[in-house]
Image (cartoon, rainbow over all chains, first blue to last red):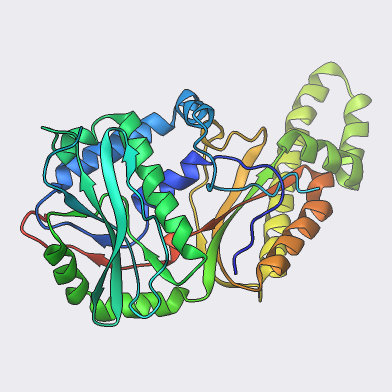
Length: 75
Length: 277
């Protein structure tokens, strides 16, 4: 089973967006999102994530649980 | 309050005979409501979905134009998948896979059934871990300057040279240190790959992130994703620890992230439906 890494929990929002927006299986819904609309959302988010303030705001909002864990420092 | 007809949000695809246990409650995200997780079987596979009720009068496209709400929705997408990945093999969907009803999901699942099954077999029993390597170039340069005889010799020559000659020699020394640093980075990354061989099942190279994204004080020199079999994760962590110890004196640092659903190791890309471009 996957183990939880020891050490501090750290939000890696750039890593999450890279995966959730650029990777994974692509199956477009049949009538709900136009591709152009989705692309605009992606572009907007990519610009947003470049802002350190945005990542900090997410961290401040306590939405790091269950996210990524850094192994540094583990001891 | 959300009163509009629900959409169907698709999180991931699993094998039909091992449906994961997941959220049974309603989750409110930015004013939208994700209903309890539902399993839609189709052949040997099942889709893991939730009903999605948008705030009244909102279209999905407009809803996602709000960056804060979109961030929260992406986090919900990830949390749902992260909860499944420890239970069974799951194909993570890219964020934003939304249908107007269950039938639309089933149609897509049937259309890509064999490809999905092949993909799910490829990630079964494994999870994705990210690994980043950072290099403190200043520290590396100092270390090399102390230890490389050719650099130490050059430094001694500069200290005894006239001011004008010293300037040009200093530029040459800088280039020499840069070249040695590049070689040291290659050695570090070759060593890293060599040590991890046999531990990971598959590897995917990621993009190098700028400092404002990774937040580390040093420069990122490697960003990769490793598909690690359950039971091999300890070996991965121990090896990363060994590597960190071996290379820290040269200014290198290692950072792992995960476990992730295997986003980086699924290839399916089905464009279907009436609005697909």
